[in-house]
Length: 134
Image 1 (cartoon, helix red, strand yellow):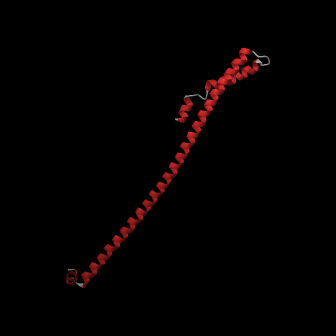
Image 2: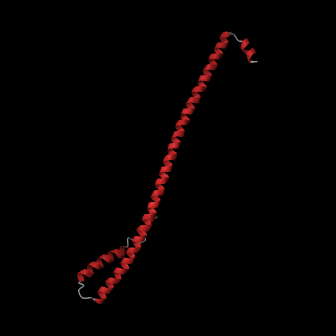
Image 3: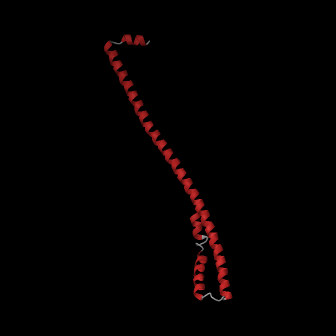
């Protein structure tokens, strides 16, 4: 069938047809190359984005671990401060009520000032600490 088609055409028509087919093949080759280049670029961008996402997730996990550790440390310090405030208040009450000799009012006033400030604030016990850890 192809043979009968080519025999019915003149040599000039065959050359024109061959030239047209060569142009078509070149066009498809160029198109395929362009497509391959574009998708290669897109694939590289996707892989870079994946790598960046992995690094970001790892950094997030490390930051969350650090936040957890710091929140635990903050809770521990808050408990220690509360314990020290209660002990300090007890000691101050003992000093004031017993009026022990050798304890001047200056010492008691300084001790009271320090413990009162710490105990009243307690690092703004539930407000600021809850916001920091939340």
